[in-house]
Image 1 (spheres, rainbow, N blue to C red):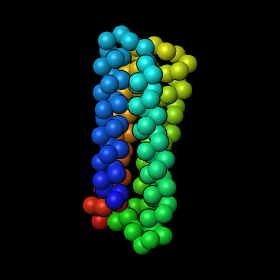
Image 2: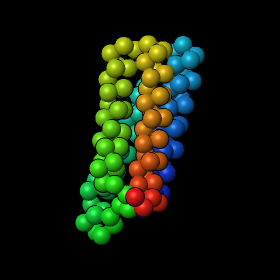
Image 3: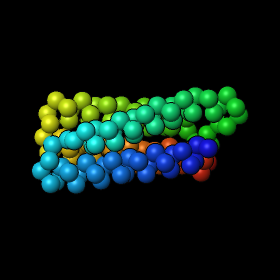
Image 4: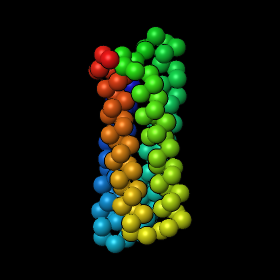
Length: 122
């Protein structure tokens, strides 16, 4: 379950990131669609936090470092919030690009979290 959910999160984060970067480079300010996509990424991250808390209770422990996993998860959860607030305050084309970069950074962190949880044996 964690694997397919994480792939869904990565796909949404990449789509939101690319949408924001294209809009920003086109000189547009953050739209409701861009902020909504970032909101979806954040909602999925909150669900991921719940899964990460519940999964060890069911015997599904990560195969990698828990510290690294939680650092990525907390960073990924805080980054969209910070980028979203900044975009709402500034409302420029560059804040839209930053939203896109933040979403892509979240996608990379999610992929690393998936490696820690399922693939890597650290």
